[in-house]
Image 1 (cartoon, rainbow, N blue to C red):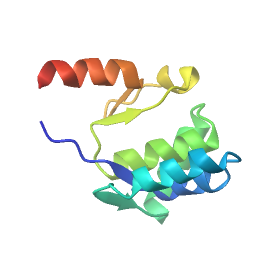
Image 2: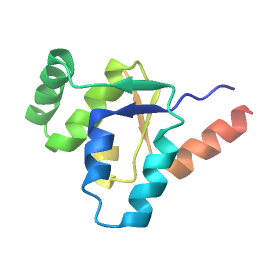
Image 3: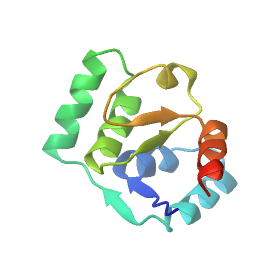
Image 4: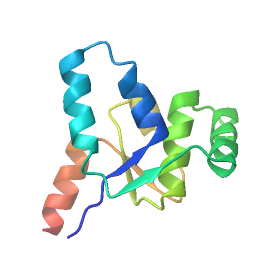
Length: 106
């Protein structure tokens, strides 16, 4: 099983405004392991606008657009509202379910 972490402009933005310095540093260090980076582009922003119009909050819509743009299989979140959103191109899943699911594959 191979997992690839994808970093994005929205992840870096949200981490930059994190008020907890230790968390900010740990997340920044973790994101250095990303195998791919999704930057802001017209395609990503247009997709994010469409998701926003369909009920997602702006930042969540941008996370989803970046993940789909990167052709991710999974988007991991703890946001209950985001977890209820469905898109056939990606599995939106919480970390516990993801690790149980992927642990079973190992």
